[in-house]
Length: 67
Image 1 (cartoon, rainbow, N blue to C red):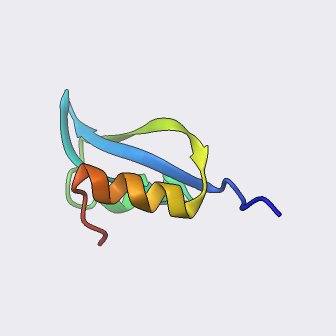
Image 2 (spheres, rainbow, N blue to C red):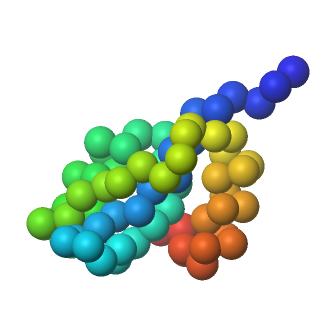
């Protein structure tokens, strides 16, 4: 059985600068969490939704630390 593709990869940007990146199953919630720190920032989705396993590999490969 195929694993569900329910995980987003994203960059959180302030202006043109990526200040954080990671994975989530809810982009809106994650964006508002990040806006507590960077009020003028926004999320940019990277690619399509994917499996959690593939998203975690991407996150590690890019050097983003889970928080």
